[in-house]
Each structure stands twice: as structure tokens, then as C-alpha cells.
Length: 393
Image 1 (tube, one colour):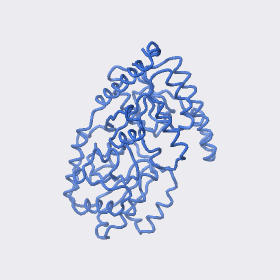
Image 2: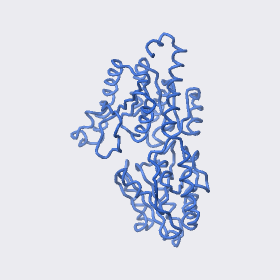
Image 3: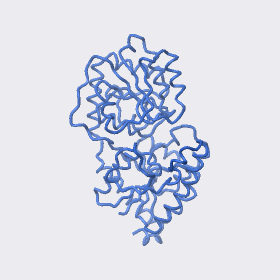
Image 4: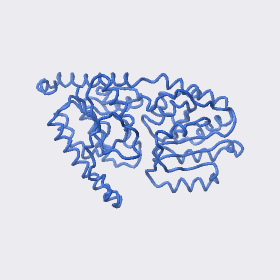
């Protein structure tokens, strides 16, 4: 099949790359449509990427504009890019159009029917809660739900996502497909120890829903003699004002133990970030599936996470680490303390995480499952709309 995968801002480039590789391995011809690659983007070697989006908004002159103007230019450019892509796909129709993200649902919803006349539409619903609960207008949420009703098939990664789509009356269109590892399992690694400093790492884009403030508060509640045996690192590119996080650190006198590092981490350095005696922490308020979780498992890290989405599906409390209720600072602090005090437990969690990583579906298997969703979408279209059969063959 000819497959067009669309991720305008390349929000999930590592996931896109693995999926494209898997589909191509099965003999399909897959093109990823997104923005131009940037210096700090993850490796995308071997993937055919068409720079279909934001060729105006991506110019240096636009990046220097005030944020309101910059967002306005990007919105207009997004609509223009979607229309140009629509024109391209009409000239060279694929067999499947698979959207990964709809960044501007209020505008996208008006164009999806035109895309659907070209080929069956599939959407991966990475976030069943719009923007994971971050500031987003009710109109945007409503538009996203309308968008989802425009697709022939929807893909989610978790039982939570499946349940939420069922609540919205979309269960018949939904398929639950696993999320794969975004890093190869390391051939060898340095062993964790039962003493020394334990480092809790919250890694990835720093956004409000990820609960960095909750982690700082939980760490601050620990007895000083327990806290002295640990450190906290919050590492990633911030997407909001992190001044209040620094204030929280200062307020609790944690300057020597909590570091906030607003920086991009290249792929080659992730292994060092998740080195021996580190614990991956995910105090998220909301999440569906987390690519960073799969990185952490691949590196054999103990996990402390909220009981949500892929964390709830893949982590067993007391085995790979601990699961806590979202927003429960006391429970989060207890989980941190257990790993600090019982280092034998932390080491056993590390081994269990590697075992969990080894059991995760391969990208070849995920590609086969995705292929089945595509075929199902095409078959359903032929059954429901016989007049389209010739156009879709």
C-alpha cells in the first residue's frame, strides 16, 4: 500500500520513525509529512520525510516575532499547508491517510472530509484528553471530538484510551495497539548498587501536566536524613514559565539537591541520563502513553509513576517500582522514600524493568497490527460506500 503518515509538527518523530520503518519492512511505501527537520531533532535517517508544513512559520524572521504574532502566523501557515497537502494527495492518492496529530482541530475539522474522499482516514489518538489537560479552550476540545468522528479508524495505546473512546461512542472505530520501544535494548549496562546517592529523573518536555511541582513538593516532605541520600533532576525543554518551579525549590531550601535543567538532551546522551542508580519519575496529572517510559524501561530504570495510561498498563506496583494516584503528593513521597531506603528493592526494580522491556511488542509486530487496521478501514469503506471501491483499490 501507499501510506501517507501526517505529523505536522513532528510531535512524535521517534514514534513516527519506528512505525514508518516497520511498515516499510512489510513492503509498503510510506511517506511521513511534517515540518522541516531541525538540528536538535531525533535521528530520522532512512525515513522519507516530506517537508509539507510550516515552511513560512519556520523561517528565522518569524521566530523573532512576539509569541502572539508567531502563533498567528503558524496558524495561517498550518491551514495553508493542509490545503497544499490536500492538493498533493489528490494528484497522487495514497491507499491510507494516517494522521498522528491534529494541531489545530478547529481548522482541521473543516478539511478532513476532503481528505477522506481521497482515502480512508486513520488517527492515532496519542492524547485522549486534549493536550493532557493543559490550557486548551473548550472549543478546541469540542473540535477535536468532532475531528475524531471524521475518521474511519482510531488507534489508541492503552486500556484507558479504549475506555475513553467507548464513552464518546467511538468504541466501534477504535483499535488498541501497543506502543513500542523507542530505543534499542542496550547490549550491556553498568550495574546499579545498593548504596550511594539515588537520582530521581523527570525527563522530557517540561509541561504543567507532567507534575514537576508535585515531585519537588514530595521530595521536600521527606525527612532530611532520607532526602540527603538522593537528588532530583528535572531535565528537558520547558513549554511554560518555570520561574515558579525555581521558587518552589528555593522555598524548601532544596537548591543543592534539586536541579532544573531546561535543555535539550541528544539521543546519544540519554543513556547517561538513565545510568546506574537513577530512577525514572513520572508524577503526571494526565497522560495516555509516554515515549519516555519506554526509554526508561529499555535502560532498566526503576519507575515511579502516576496510575494512568501506559504506566498503569505496563508497571506493576511493587515490581518495577511504584504507582501512585495522580496528584497525591504524600503517596509520591512515600514511593520515593521506599526506593531511597530499600536499595535492594531499587535494584530488583531495575531488573524487572528490563524484563518488562523485553516483553514489549516489536515494531514489526506493531506494523502488522497497524496494517490490519488499514485493511479493516479499507474493507469497511468498501462495504459502506461501494461507489468508492474503484478509487480505493
